[in-house]
Length: 90
Image (cartoon, rainbow, N blue to C red; front, top):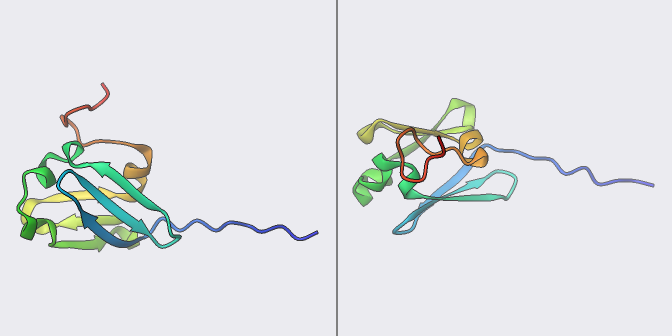
């Protein structure tokens, strides 16, 4: 009997924003959506600054040069807000 092994790939494929959330599409088809209040620099960035993302960290991270922000898919999957963010668990 053959089994189907699900392959996960947490590298970034796409990024989009709503008024209050960031969504990151992963190569394996999953989409991570987290509130912008977790990332104050992104929350207060202009729409143009938010569009200025680039993939870094071998595909597992995002960087915004204009606002000096870095996120990893690992941190987003763990549910880790930026230090000092609203709702951060101490």
